[in-house]
Image 1 (spheres, rainbow, N blue to C red):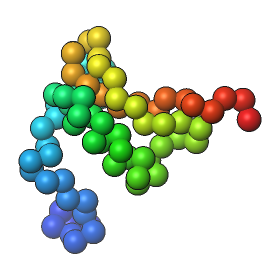
Image 2 (tube, one colour):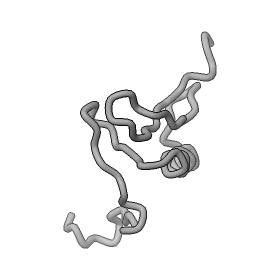
Image 3 (tube, helix red, strand yellow):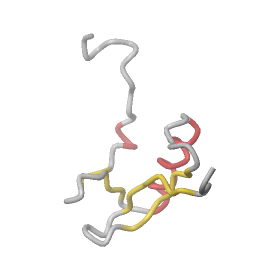
Image 4 (cartoon, rainbow, N blue to C red):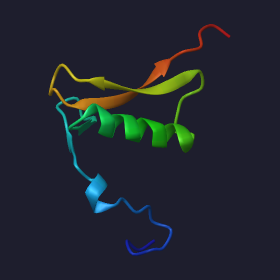
Length: 75
């Protein structure tokens, strides 16, 4: 598949304000940016069963990341 393929996912340049942290996770400058990403991931179904995508501020880099937070236990 070529990079210019119409099926390739497009990321708007204005949304590409992220960097990588020493933990290798994508870092977002603000909680709102991480929250927007979390909502998008939930809408697209990119979430583990029994979890909710949640933003959190990283102790390593100070930026915001998202993770699968387990909300349903022991089924």
